[in-house]
Image 1 (cartoon, rainbow, N blue to C red):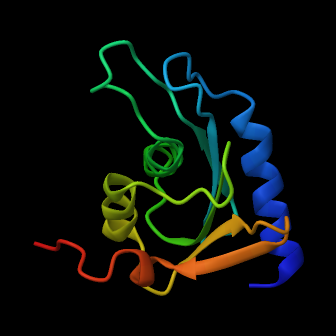
Image 2: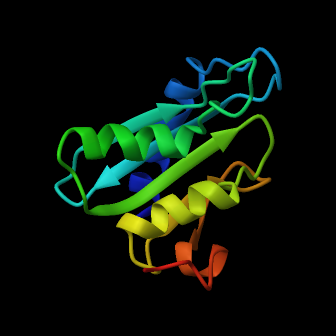
Image 3: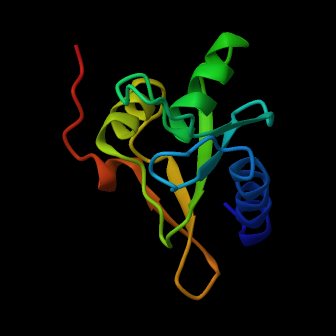
Length: 129
């Protein structure tokens, strides 16, 4: 994936991060998921005072895409209040349901430049039925 494409996804994730609802953790996250058809689905974290129903930005993006019939994805960009911001274990497993291990997870490096790591590097032994 080209650097300008990665920057575009990161920018979309940053825009969406502004909509995060995180009154408890004060940690806002935005995600931009690129479907193989070129459409981008975004998500932000949405917390709940009961904590268990809280949903991460990555899962919101995936679930939104699935609700619109998408099942194949090319990349996801994630931004948070810290750099780098990586998906939690649950989000890694959800991504592995729909994405192959080579899918890039895009994040900002400490220098502000886009970087990526593969899903397989983050979750080398995902659970599969």
